[in-house]
Image: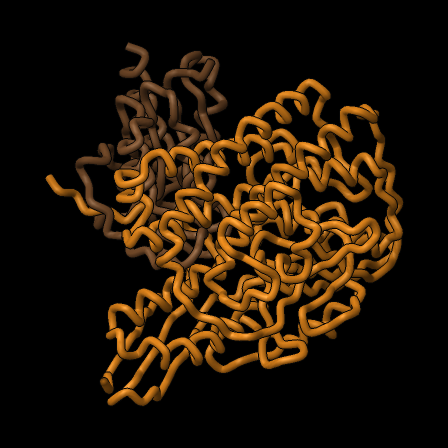
Amino acid sequence: MRKPTVVLGLGNPLMADEGIGIDLVERLAQEAGRYPTVEFIDAGTGGMSVLHRIEGRSKAILIDCAYMGEAPGTIRRFTPDEVRSTKVLAHQSLHEADLLRVLTLAEQLGQSPGQVVIFGIQPQVVEVRQGLSGVLFRRVEHYLAEIRSELEKSAG
Amino acid sequence: MAKTVNVNVHHVTRVEGHGNIVVNATDGKVEKVEWQVPEAPRFFEAMVRGRSYEDIQTIVSRICGICSITHSLASTKAVENAMGIKVSEQADKVRILMHYSEQLQSHVLHVGYLVAPDLFGLPSVVPLAAKAPDAVMAVIRLHRLANEWSDLIAGRTTHPVTLTPGGLTKFPTEKELRELLERLKNCVADLKAVAEAVLSAASNIPDFTRETEYVSLKQDNPPTYTFYHGDITSTDYDGAVSIHDWQSVANEYMNDQSTAKWTKWHRESYTVGALARFNNNAPLLSPMAKDVAKMFGLAQGCCNPFMNSVAQIVEAVHVVETSIALIDELLTTGLKPETVKVSPKAGKASGCVEAPRGILFHQYEFDRKGNCVGADICIPTNQNHAAIQQDFEKFVPEILDEGEDAVRLKLEMLVRSYDPCISCSTHMLNVQFVR
């Protein structure tokens, strides 16, 4: 039996701030005992596999690095219908992914959870190296507090 | 009618590589046709230097998020060949089963999410889900099965954790294998549904051929439609070359229009992938896979690169049918626990397997402590670059009269048909708030 809520951390920890989603979901997974109805998953760079992770849930919370035109380190909570993807895909290979399109597909196929919430975090640095930039690293506790408060809402 | 066509599909980005398509033609005369690959170097061959033989597969599995099992297997086999490490028959079979899961996963994803929208004249899988929901649902179920199959045998969906030089750290239980067997038997209906959906739109597969050389593995003992064991062969070559001599096949060279290396063997280019394997090994396909090939009119000697996607459907059926037989064998003999003990030693050797997108070569050299002192990796996508360029050169004059949009679409479709592995490293959201 799947847990009704899933938290997916998305990103690549080998690309600095692109790994923020993974960093946060790993930290939250250490508190899993506090959230018996929540499954925490490191979903890597996601792609189409996100479909299988969210199927059959009542709520999905996704944490990802996002270019939102905000100051680096800003976290924003939004739902898929509040945003438009500005990502241009070449559709040349399986190696591209756009989370918003995957969520649209889930919706179309009737496999989307009732509630989908995305936490986007504006990066400071995206390059080939491990570890977050100082700007994001210093705000990790703030990000966790935001996501925990979302989880309290789910439980309530 | 003489046409002036300028197509420039340009995707310059240093973090997510893409190929660029450049076509310039004036008054029906083609002036420039180029397939450019401006990928950033990724330094995996340098990254593994100084690392222990035990760490190699963990690092190189990160080369690709789609075919990580394949890279892990090729590197593990190279380590074993370099150090004379033997693998039990049981571990060998389970590894092949692991490898099949990735073939299914990758082929289903490629055909379902990238090729099918083209054939139905749609921009992506999202509108396709509205037009052909049953077929898309079948693709999603197959994809999920393949993911969970990888999870079971490899320890997780992507980047395997059960592979180790000398064998596997964990074997599936007989109960788990029996459950997988049931699921594989039950997925045949979905495979047929996907094949029939693609067949219904197969008239949109462009009618284009270019005779070329097709390179893949072949295995004679026992005769097998192989992805894992064997030697290198080609449609231009009657014999077989040892995988340890792969450099004499690939003949890698640098090219001004690409940061990726290109390859050639008997001609100016060769092709690898599902169609290459099919052209070299078709008589060894499983019965149901042969039926699917017949359904599409796919026969040995096919030189239409667009048919690579059809060959992938054929192979998806083949790996499921073959895995059912393989699991039966494993259950009949029973799985016995194994302990792997390896003593590192100096050596240099190659490992080779077929990735979903074509033949893959890894070569490593180790010192006596088992630390890597050199690596050489040759991926299938690089082996297809020259073929894509030569296809462009023949195809563009044939379709020039169709206008810019048609030329752009057909060239994009051609690139997609090769199922290229163009590095994926970032998948962040790019969003604009609409409220």
